[in-house]
Picture 1: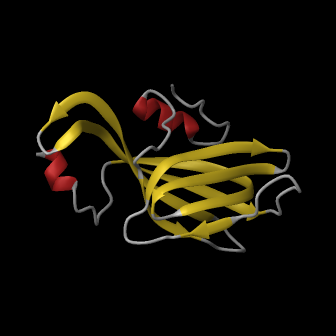
Picture 2: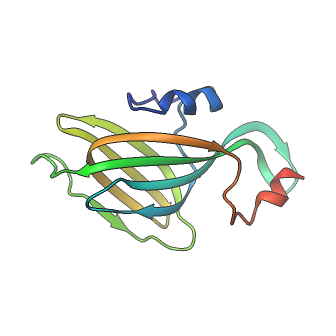
Amino acid sequence: MRDQAPDIPGAGAVVAWFGYWPTFHDAEVTSIFLDRSGPSRVVVRTWHTTPQLGGQVYFVPTKHAIVTFRMEEFIEPSNEESNPRIENFNLQNVLSCALVKKTPDGYKLVLDGIYGVDAMFHIARMSVELVPGFPADNQYANKLTK
């Protein structure tokens, strides 16, 4: 089952690239930049997983991309919401999923970690940007593109 694309600027480009809104399962958070007075961002390396089996990789990944969640104006969560948090950021930050949820005051971005980072942000406005390919420092790019 695929997640429904959030109603935020840039989501259409993500859907156009992958053909659906990804869950970000097994994606890797490469950086989190927080700025209290300007845009903040979470950068995620992700891909489409095909049903093909191949080589050293169990399922063959394609459509590699860098997805950047841009966040503006952090807000206090309502009483029933969990507090914002960032935990366990390390050298590899693998996600179970990344969820964007509309709230009465804006949005909630949840990074549900498998290994490494686990986070939640409450923001007034957000958008997403997709850049096809690998990050410049990706150690797996050569292995996966051969």
